[in-house]
Length: 455
Image 1 (tube, one colour):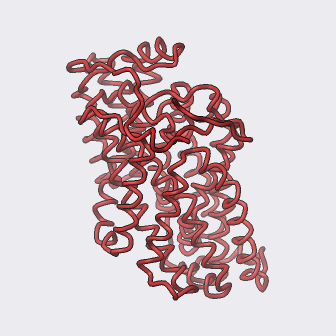
Image 2 (cartoon, helix red, strand yellow):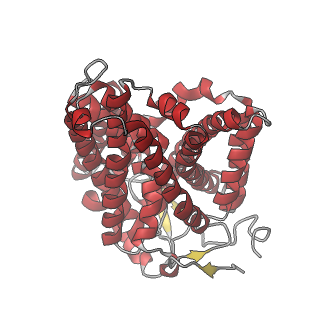
Image 3 (cartoon, rainbow, N blue to C red):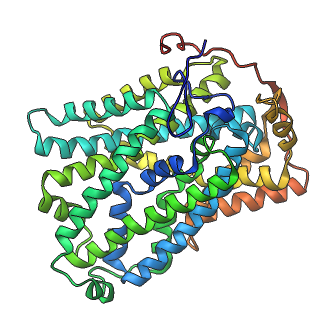
């Protein structure tokens, strides 16, 4: 029997499976601010700091400001629409995709893409943190620190959203305090007005290029938004936590990076800042990586659980999958081989943006399977069946990914989202969105491995 408890934030801590293949019930939802802290933690990671520095090195302050603004608005629109799907249905990205255009088998492909891509980035970022930790605590080799860091995150993610929420309440404020201290230490000898008026130190970066960097930098996080928003309570909560989390993350951390790039006249602000604040800088790296890496692992686990369920017909407890994936990612990070696969992971990421366009188009416009979701929602169950394949969707997915990857105009990631949305709507109007075969959705059973994780 499932053993649960209630957190101060209002959510219910489950046995570790965290509703990986079922709807999140009302009693397990959280306040909008609790979810916003996690969203802010995602956006305000170290990568956002470096993104701001890249903008500042090639743009004036105000050009960078507007690039951040437009990029943030684009991300917020994507996150809000796909996030509303998550909160209404209480399902994670790869599961709800079964009735949002991709079908049963197509959702397995999504789960695999998410799982492989994010566990790769989990390992790479664990290695980055290990490098910093080894610099101030050399009594352990770097490979050992990679294991320690990766396994620590794995232990936290094992217990699910509630555990991650508790850690976010500690790490996010601490990260902001340390960043604030480091920035003040570096900027105290500079005039803020002079920095805002100064010309960039590097080659000019166009407004379009800057906006592309901002929007593309978090598009994968935007696509997996339902993994997070299924724990929200209302669509209004999704809007609030998205506006607060992304806006503050982009402006507070992004603009800080812009100012620092103008101050030190370099895009390599990480080395400069971290060398000037010593061990505090290492903590910034670790904490800044922590709150994005736990979500890398969490969403990777959810995607693989869905993949196993669809392909092998086995319901494996999310925590068990998380443990296996987390240990694997940590070992790969320790072995130092993941950097060789960075190009592959970037290429895999090309497939992310169209997913959002297709899901939003199906759920809000075409609505081929919307009724199935609505009828089962009241009972808190999944629809009795899902289309096995939706051939038109797969074609649209591939074409849109290629458009985004090879287009030489506009914003590549947004081109991919927009083209997927438009093509899917057109295909829907032409009657081309049809499922091939039907797959019965089995009634939820206790996933394998659950008994070992309850207490």
